[in-house]
Image (cartoon, rainbow, N blue to C red):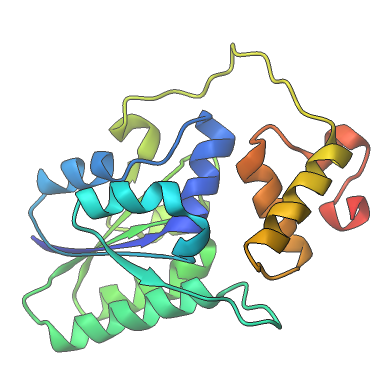
Length: 213
């Protein structure tokens, strides 16, 4: 297989942090994919200005970091669209690429997976099994659990200590202001989870994050 790797970094990073309490390491994914064939292209999508600690790891593994700057009005699915367009373009313009690895658990990628298979491409999925869409897993030709690749297991025996959610809100909002971030509730929750992966609005007595806000 000649494999092109596409990483939805925000999605996989949150999944790894919230489930495994670890940092996402792309090297574990790449090492596993090298057992399946030759990796001919590697792309990762994120607003890298707010993911500075991860940029060094990506650079060390020669992953091309595709910079995304959210618009002031918000573009929650912007990374999904960019990734899907680039993958389809590669499918048309690089006929020697016969396999695509999608590193994400987002069900939004199901149409992309199906379209790539229509074009005769082999599709490999990689994600956190506990948080990945079952439909996405079922539609891939092959699926890898990041936990297994990295030799990690969910830390169920580790006591979950959640910080005061209101203090966490203030810290997250302050960080978003410093980074000139998009001030949306979905992004607020993302930043809060990055600061404290144990955060869950249900522990504060709210069934949904919108009610918590």
